[in-house]
Amino acid sequence: MVQDGRIQNLIAWSMIGIVALVDTVWFVATDVELSIPGSSTAIISAVAVGSLLFLYSTLRRDEKIAEALSSVLLLLGFSAATAPLSYLVAWLGLPLWDGVLQSWDEAMGLSWRAYLAWMNDHPTIAEGFKFAYQSLMPQAVIVSLVLGLTGRRSELRAFTLAIVMSGVLCVLLSGAMPALGTYFHFGLEPRDYPNFSPAAPYSHIEHVLGLRDGTFKVFSLNAAEGIITFPSYHASLAVIFLRGLWSVPVLRWPGVILNVAVLAATPINGGHYFVDVGAGIAIAMGCLWIARDPRRLFAWQGATRLIPVPLLFRHRRNWAA
Image (tube, rainbow, N blue to C red):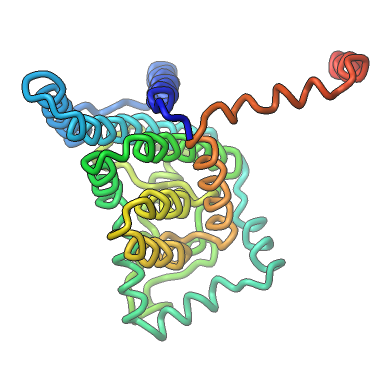
């Protein structure tokens, strides 16, 4: 891992800045309005954490506390920037992929409806999985504070960069391969699973359909929904949190149990296809690999030296044609 982790924070904040710029252009160029009062929670949270960061960076200097608060502030900024981006890519209204995603599940011999039926027959397990599924927001804060306060600076900065990178990738892919999720696709209603209540089966549908037909006009961070189906960002975060907690011995195995439960819970509680979860895991693993040493981003440059120059020129001529 890179010993000086400042490059991770620089990349993360740069990505957030680019996303925020794209969001701004979207709001200016379309008739979708950003509600400032409707984003008050995010604003107040950022101001509070920023004030504490200033306090522990200057007046009462404590590097560990400041590092932890810096990570929390970065994640708040990331959430505020990528939530509008997820709505922007849904607003593009590209063809839906639900049928394709279902066929990929079936090609692997996986039946989402059979899994739903099993959950309905085991409501105690289903409720436990639901609790795990809803733990990601607290986990983000807890892992940031634990890694910062225990002086695991490199782990913390890799953790935050992996969250940012995987989030941006999941959002962009969700725009290219939009889907409405399993509950809507299969036409299910609560009476089809009477023994338990999933966390978020339909909450995103109104927003996604409104974005696609042009009736969605006001965006509010307070009311923003997780509208990504493929890939599952929940699955990506579960892997990243598991890796972050793995570096803290006392939290290692609780982190494994909790986040494996998140992965198991994601198809039913988030209305995800199984391939959504697999794609989210793959993205997280790739982003963690890069985040631990961002120089790996440029490793491909050395490989290009192995390609004969005339071959490159020939391909360039083909592209031009």
